[in-house]
Image (cartoon, rainbow, N blue to C red; front, side, top):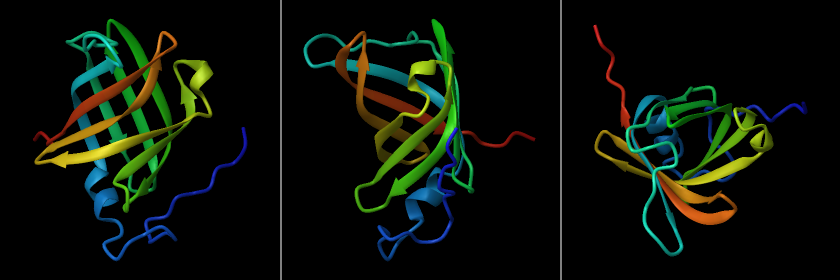
Length: 143
């Protein structure tokens, strides 16, 4: 596998004066609240079921790991880059439970709402375009 550029915690060429604020807010562990997809026409659906459970980890070093299970299982590992100007994160998949997605990059729009993180973007399901909305809740450390 080709080597990847190592993300740094410092400012990038695309950074604004408030660089790192979104990235810092993303860092840590998140628990899945909901994962839905809406086709161009039709009803919202839940690709892994309405009761799916999952975890999302963003490391300070720039690694990302996602595991979602419900009516199936989906997971990947890789690295992430943040564009502070457009409030987007791109997950660069190195390993994936769906082998056809290894090497892909998924751009997601970021909305931080209180203790929740909402990632949204385009995705194909069964060959048809959908807009996904994945809601995560920050995991609070337990004693």
